Image 1 (cartoon, helix red, strand yellow):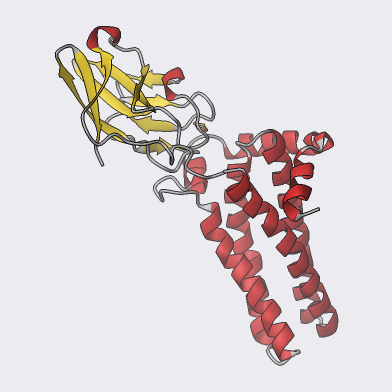
Image 2 (cartoon, protein in one colour):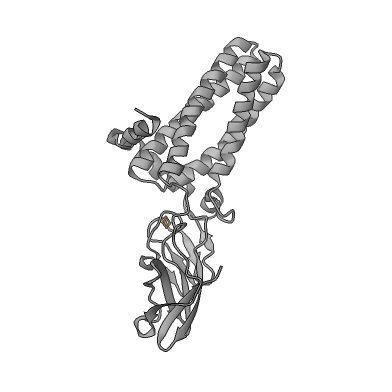
Length: 284
Ligand code: FES
């Protein structure tokens, strides 16, 4: 059985829900909506923050392991510096991962909790490795470090699975075609003032909203996890729509993310009315 199949089976272990569901709920409550969530989700960055941060601890621990393997104790001070840096960098990395994971469900949440447990185990091993080295037990420190690297490798695989096999953190609207020519989408009479409406342009779902004589159009599929924005709430004063699934807020004027967990803006469309038909054209 390959790694993918094993992880696929892991997704189906319902018993993990007993741990994963309350932990995810607690993480969601602790992080909450607002600035902390936005920061940890990568709002303003244009993609999630977690994968950016993972490079630092993984790089530091990998460097320490390579120096241990190649130097056999000759580069002990450098190894200890790298272990310390990796442990420090793991804190914000874990916080960002926790923020992403708190919005997952089912199989993704189960794999995520094993990924998190693996990372905690790896950090404990690297921490113990550093403590052993500082106490003068270099041999034990190296063994613990190698064990940490092994656990970290398995855990990193699960993180990659969540992103590349399950699409967690991936722009869910990436495949939506954006019509660059004026495309009729709806009769003007069908667009009621103050009511979000879903329309289609060349197979792409568009959110239309009319207020104060203006019509706004942005992508309707939430970039976070594909939620239907036309079913969300629109604030006509702030000109923003809130996704009904996890509460991301997008600006109607240009599709920009106002609040996460989404980090990728919605496509924005120019709108015009021709002979009673609303037409849209992708702005970018
Ligand atoms: S699908 Fe998660 S916020 Fe929209």
